Length: 397
Image (cartoon, rainbow, N blue to C red; front, side):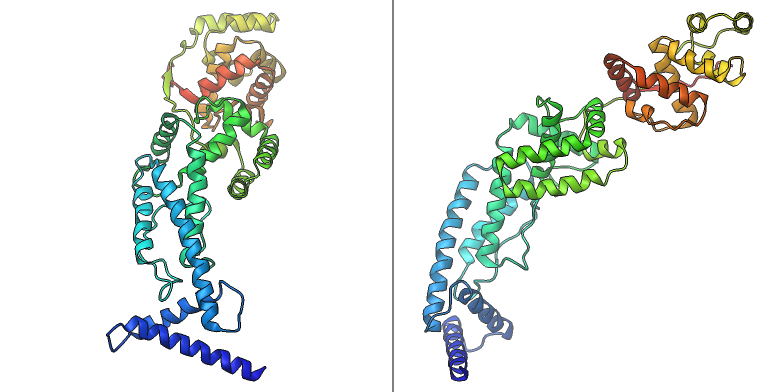
């Protein structure tokens, strides 16, 4: 056993010397770093095949195995370049172009473990670990993963993708063509969300769809997992697990909305009727003292400021205030919600925010109660109002 190890070690030294002499090619000196690289390259090649009686034979077998991998990887690279759509992203084009330099420079005798010539600025959704993969193994893994991502993106119309990328740039304040971000991951997340809500005409999510996702988060993740199991793509599953980690770590609906790219919204100022005159308000108070019905009070109100004043001067009992909030016309209710949101500096953007209000006071109890009873069309309308409008807080006093 000992003699065998000595013999193998001597063979290794002899093979290393042979490669060094070959690398010298007329020169008399090689830098120590280059000699060390040749030794690492030799070990890399030898690791590709099982031990044989001759280390030289093992080395040649290892080179043959790697050469087959080089040939297959070059074919994959050619396929990628022939079908490449870079969407104007500089990092994609420049990173892939550098593989041509790699294939020209790659030498199995001297630098089999290295990736000289590569300049990879474009990040994959599942990066290749350069500590685990070296040389052509690294290149093969990167191109294989890139090809999976590219094939996925190619399933969708370019115009739809560009709209998503441009909207993401605007919402996240970056330039998708210059800043390094992974396109596949962005599209993959949006695709799963849109598939669940049943609307795939665009990758952009509406505020209502965000609310629906948040309210059905568990079903969303389960359905997405079942869908991916049917496809049975290991790469998709890896990225999906990242997605699950993002989703499960979110604390509220607003955070979910920040994870996705949404339809652009414009905040407009909503003007409402001014409060009723003092004379008219006194008349209303007299009617209330005489015991008029809540519905009649609701019909008397013209402005959210009138309702707020009734609450603040305690003309009506808390129980009747809650009933009144449930009775007023929907437009007045929506304006009242905007008024309270502005006045109390609340972060209300969806119907879910209103339905999860804590029972702190009469107003929040009333708003929560009414929000829980809204019809679907009213929910959609209120969501749009909360997303697009702020109340004009003109001082009418």
